[in-house]
Length: 494
Ligand code: FAD
Image 1 (cartoon, rainbow, N blue to C red):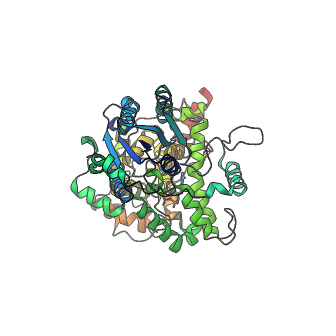
Image 2: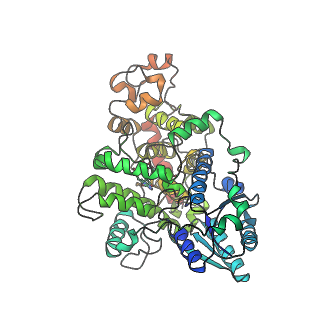
Image 3: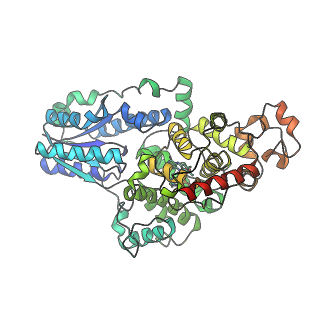
């Protein structure tokens, strides 16, 4: 009597492979399509999902529910308290709805793969079919291997293979059709499902009213907003992306990560729309800004590929086992100063305050603060990785873990451990006028010239002190030596 599509991190109707296939199946069988979303508070805990992210997802669900209702497709949303009961509950609902076909887009994290494996077994026992689609990445993880048949552990050759593979299989960029309208009878058969409310977030994931308003205006939800943002970025900024993407005071990047992470935008659509602006129709030729942007979207695919080939990266382990024995400092005061943006390094503090203020941080700054935490403070990179997940609106396990692994030199294709960012030089190079710092560190608003990057070292200490800005909590040169020694000892003892 029905076909079911189970939404997860694919909160859109456009270019959604499993949804499109579910719709085809329902049409062929002459039965309605029912959409399902399961809210799992235990998953939020296990995955450290930020409150801003939960809020964003719930707002996306409201948009999705309306879009689907316009097609007479109900979206049933249910909270399931125990995460290991989710497959049972999905089956119960399918039985109640008389459905024998369940469609999902595969998620590649270990917990999700286990859940899907359980779901497949349980469906088979009940003679139901679980249809799984690969939709999250442009190229399915596991597809690309080096000449020796091994998975790539370095981005550049992987990226060249990614481009080649897409050029040879252009159907990978073809968009899936949106779902068709349900038969009118769906409104009668599933009347109760159309009245489903958007549930409130779990108690510990609630934003204050003021925060909710701020994040709503910063990050409008849903797939239409994603397309608007993509079109605007392609119209106004993509041409200058290669030049501006490292300057955090500009709007040089797309701000689309929240949409990729929630699935309100498919990577396929994004790459295709960007490529179509390039006269060559190639991913790696033509306008430099477009090529560079596509190569950044590819990083997202790359980190999913890493997750699939080396699933132990999901288990708190460094990609490189020889980096397991570094003696980290676990200094709680240093960690608190880092999280609160009062390290005395203006670029670090600006970035950490941006994270709290926006639920988002510019990529260049993510690299700076991650390097600062793991090298200058010698704190365990996993503390930073966790803190990011707890606060990012775009928190995505694979990209976050990959970014931290890169910056702390413990990951795939890392920054070599002996190349340590100098936060002051990074600040001078990427925020030359200090505009970004002034925006997020108001104590330094009145500081002019280069002193903004290092107020205590450049003669405006008394002014900074008066304004309440802290002194640096470490001295970079000494901290660098300490990190080099600790990394070396760790590797030698590993
Ligand atoms: P753009 O510059 O417009 O890039 C377009 C898209 O490409 C992004 O939206 C993103 O999906 C992808 N992308 C760009 N750079 C990267 C990258 N280095 N790695 C993976 N994908 C990339 N990104 C997340 O989506 N979620 C995270 O949790 C996350 N954590 C990170 C942690 C660290 C320590 C670092 C260094 C990077 C992290 N990133 C993460 C990657 C990157 O910082 C963000 O994707 C980017 O800043 C988002 O802004 P944007 O959409 O304007 O990016």
